[in-house]
Image (cartoon, rainbow, N blue to C red; front, top):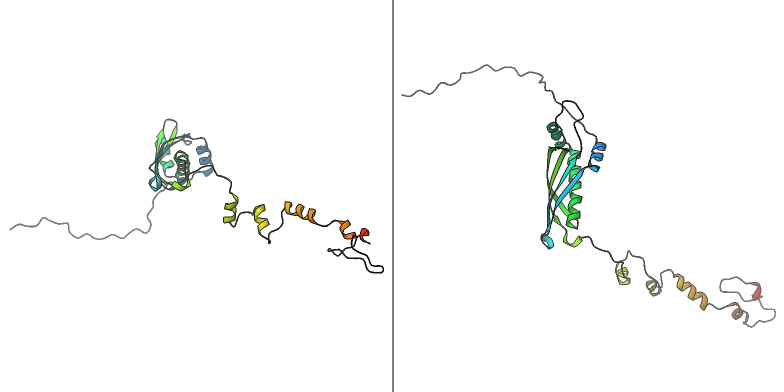
Length: 216
């Protein structure tokens, strides 16, 4: 008959302590300092767009070298790079810079970007490497814009009407050329004075309701 191996016996439970003490070190960074460092950073990008139509995608990477050194004694470059990797300001600025670099190389706007960010110390400071993968909008590539024609203005209700449209629409305000044409076609003062006068009758009134000295 085999006996089971011995098991630990019952132990008396202890009361849980009321407080548990833990020391935590927190670090806060300056967004203004990060802005200056990213403006002076060395950026090297590579990659390009592949495919056609809706399958056109961009694959590339950007290497951003931040020129900084530890400012506190006893801090190593590895510790500085670890703190930089956890800073949200660095991740947001690095992603925006990598997206701008990718749009310039892809020659068009990008859809949602998938990126992988790695931070490591470098001989010149801290290197932030961003791998980028995104779809390129095929119908929104940057190109020269031409001025809209009269037919395009007529199709778009938000565009200002042209002179030909004003002449066709009787509700539109007359243009400068229409006003000059109306002045040339209006009768002059000699035509008004040629009307027959009856002695003792009142002077004829003009269309505007005013009578000038030449009409009396």
